[in-house]
Image (cartoon, rainbow, N blue to C red; front, side, top):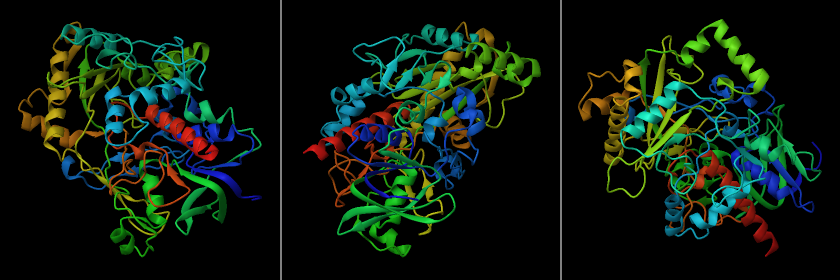
Length: 534
């Protein structure tokens, strides 16, 4: 396979990895290798925004992970889609662009992670962004990542936004602006009606650089560690052959909150007892690897309507034809939409400083994206708690690098989480009773109006809730003994190795995680370049 000797090796071509490949290879004096376990992002459905209906649960581009039976979900196992393709989950996600709250990042800094306060990361968000409304104190113009407004509306979502205001919640035209709180419409990572994944935004402009090599269908199986320093990586190529890469500078793991801790553990970096149980030689006893797993659990309320929704449009041949024609001619309409149209951030208790629940409003309903819409007009109100206190973990199932690790989310283990998700469900019900939305609702499909007590609603959540695809925290940043990386994202006790993806979050951000993942890629590239020049 030619010369496999590089200054930097980035493992994982996802949201953060594509940023790193671009920023590091901007220096023509260094050689950069990007290894992606999945294939190229060549499928048209990746680039059509609504393509997540086709790509999620598709093993060609999705790892198709599944959790272990979870006590908090009454013993259910649930699907955990993650992107296995250039662009990672940014090639499969719902395109929603949300940064989180300034307090999230200030909290990271207060936990001992200097350089991660809101004032310090905001310039990175702005640098990455090409906001269609132009530059402002909160937004950037001219960056690689295109962020736009919706290219369609649907009356049922407009009615929900109006009803929320009637219920007393303020309208907020920009949840990524001065404040997050309120109700409004989503911003999405889209350019001219096409998905703007991290691969499109960051990798496409850089892929022709002679000092950047991209190898797809290359599954990294372990790190080569010599004298407590990473000297290279081993991966399996598309033909199943084993290849070794030597690195002069650093290896950066950007494989995500499942694969990054798994790869560390396969390489002997993790909790000593767990590694020994699988016959893996302990290189560095880091008990925090795989721990601190956090995710946003969503409860999905579905209401039947007395007027057509997207369910009706996509179930008829004529409706699908109209949708396809509108997209083909104008790059607008349902094929250009994010997973949600309206969004809300609310506080379940008045004494809270910032919102603790998030609402996603969808002009369609289904048991799961990718599995078909319901055969009746309906819309969905997705409610998730923003800052869960429950913590799960990723554990090795085997020393075999092709064996999936086990995922233990530990949802709803904390009383605060149980109380907050039920409060969010009640808020959704209250908004549904306000006009102009109430007059459009025929009845509640799920949960039934017969469920009224907190205990009944919690049981409904346990029986039906699912992930909203935001796993984080499994290579936590910090200075204490259970932290995995320091504030410069260097793995504790191992030289030449960093982690740069959502696994480094000490606490999950209060919102969707793709924009923060891209920011983490920007931050990591700055740190690596600074250290190289030092």
